[in-house]
Length: 199
Image 1: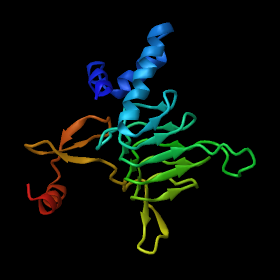
Image 2: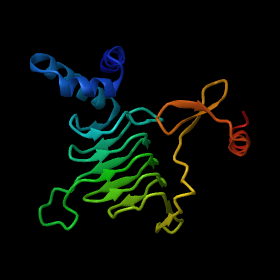
Image 3: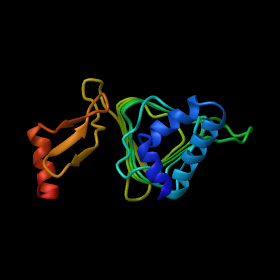
Image 4: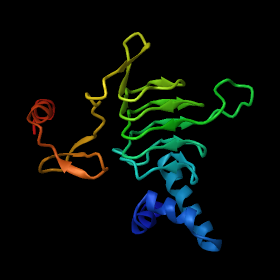
């Protein structure tokens, strides 16, 4: 709780991550210690040196998320809880290396992305998927009832929707292409949201 309060005063966990990487001397040690304290309180382990193109959207905060140091995550990504993005360090493993996640990716709860693989831009990955191979741009990874996985890739003119939709107490909003929040105005999408949540 103490780490959460202090991190909030410093602008949030990713602002703290930036401070830990840019500071020097005793301040670097203090920021880095606080960064890992916050994660300890939330059951997460996102290495302080992991590369994020910008601040990701974390619908349930930094809860049970693991991202190894060599991994790279693109801009405007949505990352849910219980996600692992992990390097494989066994030298003789054919998947030796770290994942590279593209821009505008939607990573559902329970997803594991392992080793030297590249996730394209505008990719949506269903809950509990296990990814060890490259995924093309504009794709959806589905986990079927029998546990197998299906990858569907769409034409460039039909972008996969990787936005996160949320109700702020007054209206439906979503993260846009620049990672900022905007009102949901598409009538078909609003209808589906109202049918599901009744508001």
